[in-house]
Image 1: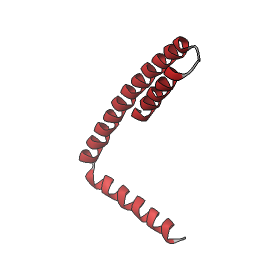
Image 2: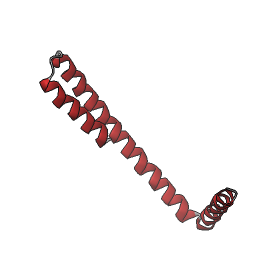
Image 3: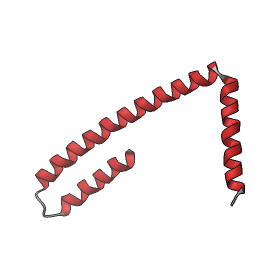
Length: 83
């Protein structure tokens, strides 16, 4: 997300030297920055919720989690060995 925000800042700096209608473009950039910031909040919130759910699941079912991890590891190893 910060890369998108930095890209918007770079465009803003470029407009300072350009001959475009900078008021319209700056208004659009401001709107885009707000959307990027809003999306960042949503992504962070959902990520934290997902991490909390995963943590709770692993603590409630440690053996099942270990078995699934073992199975996935074996599958990846088998697929990598086929090359």
